Image (tube, rainbow, N blue to C red; front, top):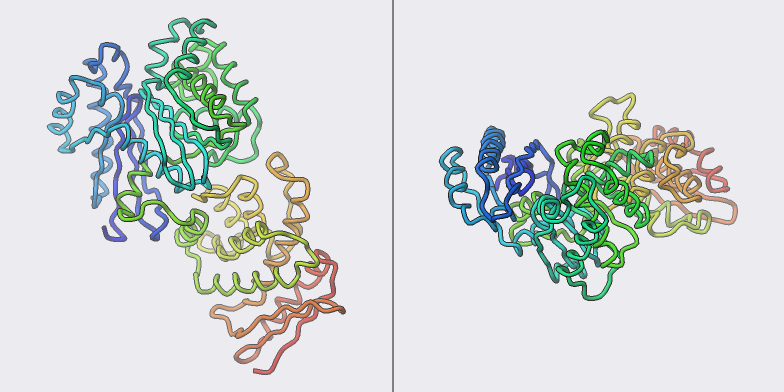
Length: 499
């Protein structure tokens, strides 16, 4: 496909019909142009196997809406798929023919294995998951996948999605203890776990809804759901709370979509039981799954798994926000040299170095919004942008470096809940290092030919060599001098070398 033409993905699920429209940014990143969601409940009342007339009508309306939106982008590819509700429906051909007749779009029904592969790709390309499990609770099915060394090694699909589990097991409102135990028993009987892995990633609308609930209950300091980690004890508490409520009480919770209020407790029970089966002490929420995985298959048909999620994500965020890549590369090189030369002073590790260099790659990210508040905008872009593979703690640190690199001491007090005790000092040191690296490359293109920090007994020296005068760079470094000296406890001297 061409770089400029978008692609559209339509997921016809048992609970929702969803649209995703994306456009390639780089070989390892895309940007979302549009989304649409319709709570069609295609699989509701499907106990006999057949889609109900009401479900068919809701599904047709949903697909008319999303295909109209998708086609308005004139996509190079429109990928439309169906999952569990259509897999199990004897009358699915009647529905698929009606969809094609009314929209001109052919919906391909995925096998359980194909659905798992797409969900895996969407997850592994947006998280740091290497070894662990993925759980995806949809309306119709529960997918449970095992990942080893970033490869999908096994996948199970069982008909225990939120709609089917509610209709089959949770008949009372609120459900009785016997009904809840029956659902938990079904999860245990139908899923096989071969060897526990402590990492569990939750995918899909149910996982995101539960993350929103956790965010509102805990006054979580970040708005982002992707990458949120919910501890086992807290998740169990959320599941127990939802089970004890009536559907009407759940509808009154602002963080829960009213369309999910009558089934969200089933998803919470299923995930809670999966956490116990997998031996997971926590669950990490992924904002990307099936639809994004299908997009990756189209964007990277030969090699859909990204080799480095973090690097690809930083590159994509930089491209989306007008970062000058060559200029940023100079800052990255300077920051790396400065960090390495001062290791004996700051005693920070390679993980900190990686955060520093990621921030350096985003130099000027907020410039296209407003020059005068560019650093605040850069901080916001990191907090809210499509940044993948970083923990929420790392997102906060990365954003703080961009916000405070020019001057000042980072204020991390709003984010204490996700930070470690020593992160205040860490951010102060890294921001000072980034500020010096940026100051040394005050102009673009830079006249600087070499930047050499050297730690001596009498202090830190920075040796500069350039093409022509470097007065602007020296002045910028002088403005950073006191802050770096305070952060590292060292005297700084800047020396110009002959060209």
